[in-house]
Each structure stands twice: as structure tokens, then as C-alpha cells.
Amino acid sequence: MNYFHIEIIGLVAAVFTTVSFIPQVLKISKKRSAKGVSVSMYVIMFIGICFWLFYGILINSVAVIVANLISGILQLVIIFFSLIHRKNN
Image 1 (cartoon, one colour):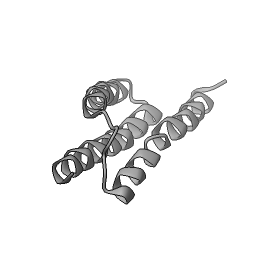
Image 2 (cartoon, rainbow, N blue to C red):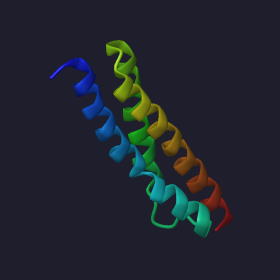
Image 3 (spheres, rainbow, N blue to C red):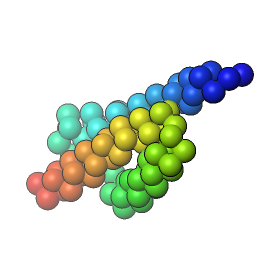
């Protein structure tokens, strides 16, 4: 297997792990409620994602960079919506 094939496997894995956050974003956005959402878990996850993003940049891995950049954005959206909708409830 060459580097390109390995990177494709990484991108496929990245798609699945990154997309997994979308249902939570949609649920909070649609219901306008963050009931049951652990903000601290998402903050800790966001910190981890930032380190993974930095790691991806250091090793120049497109799969790691793209996955963690998008996951980081989704994490921030979840954290933002959770805090906003907790204030409103």
C-alpha cells in the first residue's frame, strides 16, 4: 500500500468520525434545547481535537487535518448552542 491509499483510508475514517457529531448539532438546533448535553465533555473533546489538528499539521496528513478541522468546528457549534439554549431554558 502506498501513501495515497493509506491517506484514503484515513479520509474514510475521518468522514465517519466527523459526521458522527452532526446529529447532535441538528438535534440541539432543531429542538432549541441542550437538555442532556454534557458541555464539559464537548470542551474536553474540543481540546483533544485541537491537539489532533496540530499533530496533523506537524505530520502533514490531509486526513487528520481535515477531519479535526471540521470536527473542531462542529464541537464549537455544539458548545455554543448548548450554552445559548441552556440560558434560554
